[in-house]
Amino acid sequence: MTVFDDLVGQRTAVGQLQRAVTGAADLVSGGPGTGLTHAWLFTGPPGSGRSEAARAFAAALQCADGGCGHCGSCHQVLAGTHPDVLYVRPSGLSFGVSATRDLVLRAGSKPSGGRFRVVLFEDADRATEAASNALLKAVEEPSPRTVWLLCTPTPDDLLVTIRSRCRLVTLATPSTRELVDALVQREGIDADTARSAAVASAGQIDRARQLATDAEARRRREEVLSIPARLDGLGACVTSAARLYEIAEEESKALTTALDAKEREELRAAFGEGSTGKGVAKAMRGSAGAMKDLEERQKRRATRIKRDSYDRALLDLVAFYRDVLTLQLGARVELSTAERSGDLERVARSSAPEATLRRIDAIMECRERIAANVHPQIAMEAMTSALLAG
Image (cartoon, rainbow, N blue to C red; front, side):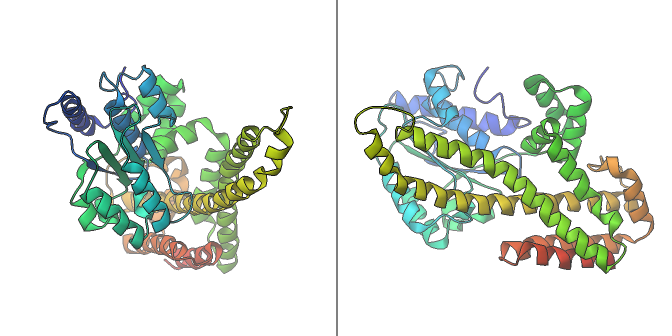
């Protein structure tokens, strides 16, 4: 088993990365390193595994056996503890120029023990314009043993000058069959549950895993999908928007609470809480500043997670109306919301395909408004009114 085995449905991308790993081994041994380049751009739809592919590639670059999956180096990279792999995931809605300059400085140093200095930058599209310009210089003039791995949904999310200097790795949406096999074989989930989750996830492995293992996630999704059938007046629109907002808030709170508590506990332990001995009390007094910094980072992350939760709920609604359109046009494709067949058929019979397209546009406009900092509940009220009007 290698580090690439967990990438579901990505045979083409894996082949490309394995050829680069061969080039990396050649470079380390003194050869030209054909096939390896200093900057890579991982793109693909949500849930396709961009970050996972980049992390597997980072492990393979550091591994003497090309990503064996069981050596100490592979374990460190996959666990996020390798000293020569810099992991960057913006905790807030953006990544600023000051943090980027610090990252570029650290990336330029020589590997301390590994074969390469690797920078794994998740959500690189969150970099501000000034940060992107700072990043461009590093990508243009890399250190000899530094490899940049940037992850974005599409190439267009980065400056053209940055993406023109990167080797593109495009990840595909896994098929339902591939997702089912992964859930059954790797997660031990029964076949029926795995198939239901795979279909509902629309090809997103993380979402499929969540729906297969988390009853609350399934309940929230079911409630979101029940909204279109309840829109029978303006009062229902306001009520449904409020509930949609609450559902997303519930999900984001569930995700952040456990993370925040674990980080606070780890920070206190690092400063010696619960220990005895000389200097512990002084260290604990000095932890106040670090705790304040942690709380600020957690607030920024909570904002990002909330935004992601709103978006996930809205995309579930898009999936519902896409299935409505499928029925209206008589297309023979798999329905991701087939469990709501009664609602789908009623909405399909009571409206025209043009109205369905307008409803999908209204949901997408709501996503844009939230991204532009319109209060989510207000944006959702405007959306549900448009869904009612068709």
